Image (cartoon, rainbow, N blue to C red; front, side):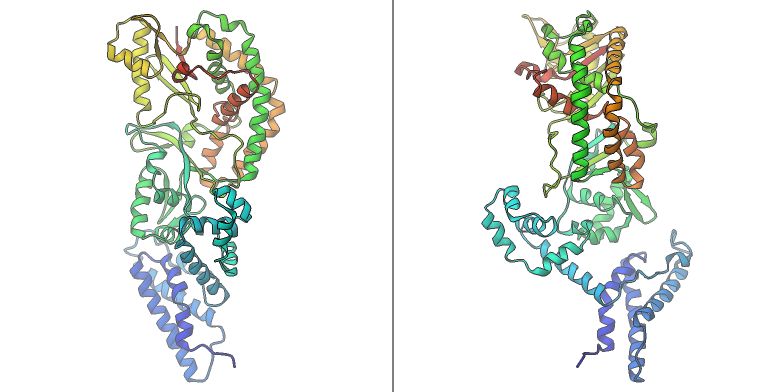
Length: 543
């Protein structure tokens, strides 16, 4: 005999989904609790009255929706005079998105139980389960990825049930954050930090901030919705979201938040297109420019200075500088349109990458230890730098700008023949700008351009070489550019377009690939140990 649910069972089955729904429609948790109790009590009484008369409500789901609609309408009317931003009642009434008992409720509750169960696994067990059931990795691949025996992987998986695999496939990626939080890397900026020296790595250094930003990257959410996704108290989310919004990393949209930074996720197709583009550009444009420059009489110009006449040392810097400054813009987005002005005066586009825990899209070349290109100018003297894995220096954005300003000020005095204190000399040596030559003597340790004439001639050489390969590279650029735009949410399109208009010019990926190509082809030789601190640095003086 088929079991017929009692009014108590029918109403109780609606409790959790109704409460979760009302949390997103009300101003606070207390209101959601009160309305849930009121709606279920009215629903329960109607079910009891029908049962007492021997009747059955024909469409209980539709009936519950009507009760919910009317109750919420009264709620909004009662708050309309005191609740700013609630809007007209009609805009806040539930449509047909109210979750109800049945298959959908069972799936939601199963997914919730699954999330809680997976969250309680050890970190290694959790990662094995996710790699196998969600990412579709084979046991052998998991063992290789984690560096553990295949038998260990098999043992962990043997404890999982069939429904675990089904549940994993049913859940959306962002819903994994409660038990499978993302980790962000390459927390960078495009622009300049403010007086505090704080960049993306400062504000998004914690796991809560990183996962909060990721949770609202593609969809605006309320504090309660974010808290549900992350499995933490709304109190913590509220304070963290306010801090990120105050500093421009989140956008406020009423009671919802939306991310204001570029977040790149592992994507095998994007990685393939990226590798195709930069490999082709390095072998065509970068190699041609290197070869043309190597044979140019411009390298003998007296206005181009470099230590000991070491051409290899010079070629670690000068071709990169020309590549970064001779590209053509593919769009017309201005920096002011794309960047965010921060409270401390910082003006930049924030960016980050999701760490690829599953090994889905491994890059062919890992950009570890890379930063730049970077420009700093003071008193007419410009310092241009790229930090590479071959450099013996670290770039800390908290102190980088102030160190550059001091270095430029002291180098201007050095070039002017002014005397410097022992402390000043020691600082310039430490920064790799000066080197000890003879007892008591010091000379510049970096490459330098002195005068606009030599600079203009070098840039013209770069533009001429580039023009011969522009048409051949255009299809690669268009495919990669479109793939990134397609994966970028609407609020970040302007920032993405700004960054993409500098493809193959002031583009870290392009310079990185070019440097690798020159080393692999033998055009460049590894630097001497004593040169590493001064590598890929160019001083530019007006005369």
